Image (cartoon, rainbow, N blue to C red; front, side, top):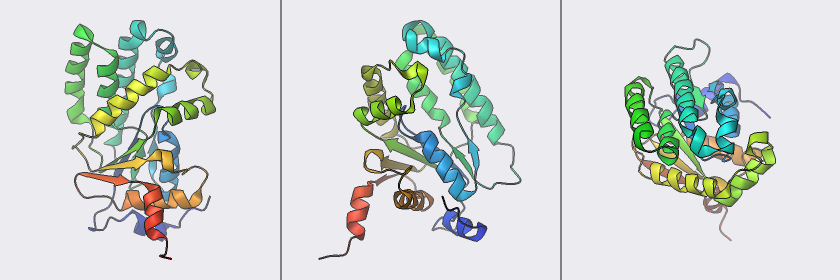
Length: 238
């Protein structure tokens, strides 16, 4: 994969209003392609890459075996890990002006409200409210919106052992919860990408198209990006 030189990367990273993009968070349901896009975007922008440490969660495999029993422990472990990473983001990186992450801290509450209730959810909310003010706000959140069917296909293809028996109903419910959350999200500029219509991993042109959209989206509110429509607009008239 060709990587732009420093001057090209700097030009590509500069927003139309003259401000630099410094922190981009990629979001989406399990299997949406968050990590893949974060890695590719960080390479294009010569950015510092911050990835969610899900494999370090000692409760995750047990959670997928028995969600009701292990939800609270799993959620608190993720909250602590994500908060530690968010605190580290505040430390200045002398080698990278841009940070790209494969999650936004606020999404932690999506899983909490889906998997917890009663006193456990109340305690979680108390802890989250204490941590949230210390988490830096992204300059842009990119939400990769896909279909439950496509998500299940991607999960099967990546072959993680603890995801072998992933419940399609769980993915469908998360898909609905993510849509509900991000269609009401206002904390940062938001780019919603129709991820079912783009292959940014295998198609260099489509990746470039998406990177351009990401680096040029800075205005407040929500921007929708459907690659198929974008290609139709660029096609010469007959």
